[in-house]
Length: 523
Image 1 (cartoon, one colour):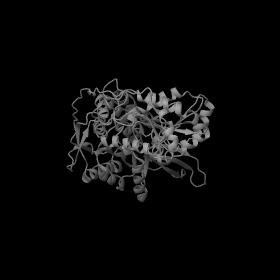
Image 2 (cartoon, rainbow, N blue to C red):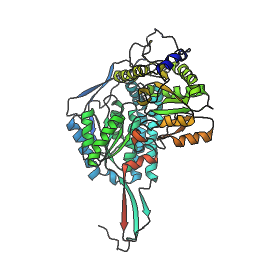
Image 3 (spheres, rainbow, N blue to C red):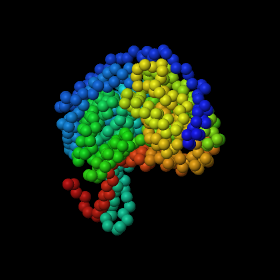
Image 4 (tube, rainbow, N blue to C red):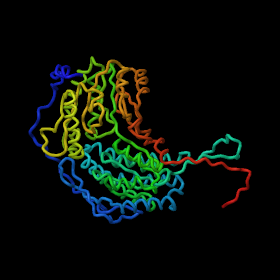
């Protein structure tokens, strides 16, 4: 991996199939005027209210760099009102005291209201984050509302109360009660806000919790619409309260003792901070954090096929996905072939306006995010990794926060590219001596969110996947299933979201022991 070796391999990493830079500057698709019905208000205690602070956030279209939304930023007084409302709704409101079956009806109403707004929510997601339109449309019409429907089904069947066996001889009747944890502060990021809200709000509502939902300033549009959804679904006052806030006001949400639990998705750095603050008051939390996930490609699997699959999946949200398979680990003898195959497939990805149906990958969400990713590319080159394709801004696009699909070879797993999450379309190929070494390299990271093995041997696949230290372990593709469970080992997070596992973090377990020989009498 030294400098001499890097120099010897330079010519081998030239992408023979890369496109010549074009000079035809992209013409973005005509954009709609976005008008939010309550774009100047917060949703608190069942009503739309004017902000008490004067702060504003201007949301820029990631393709055109032009503003298309302006929403208020919460001050401390706004956040205090939202917390007070959620606390009162939990302590003295009807929501925690409803039957799970009653709450299920509201969840289904939320799903219907989302589908009624799916086109608007999809376009906002595209313009905020750079996700391509077909993905956004599919998410808003299918995946996101389906999460609420699944939790409605689960609410009707989940064992919130079940009989237990007495083991110590005292009492004659025992029960396990699973009760709502209380008031939840949900902090969602900008990359997929409606989806990540669903993974928190749906199980929290099913469990009987109330919530303060905090949107990121970079991606607040869909969260504003989710408050419209809650109002249309008829949620009782205070059950859902929505604000957009920056970091200082968000920390107030984390620190406030009236908040029983924080549900956070975002960076590991911020997750550490949240955990340390909540540790001071023993607050509950779930953290869905970063990743540096590995794809281990065994010798029996075709390199070209693996490259096509990995390149396709890395297009999703322009690589702004915590579970992306960005470390590609292959045997040393196939390293150069893997680099060449990835450079060929990834460089052919059609980068452009995410509203254009022909586009395969859009921009990153912001100039800051794009520049950070490009900075890590430069760091990789400085540390000796060999750039095979990409690494810069697309030559044919003169505005927007676009980045070329990028592939590196000869990446040292201990280097910055091997260690740090890029959150952009950058793939790193790492050589291993054998299968055992490949698994060790895959696990040699502070993260543990995802991982995949590519092999035609099912027994080998099971063997490798059982050895992965990751919350999800997939075979022959990038796999996640939010209807089963999602979350990470190590510094990729604490707790799980999605499916049956996703409701447990919103519940407290109570053991109730009765003396059934007593006479029944109402209080």
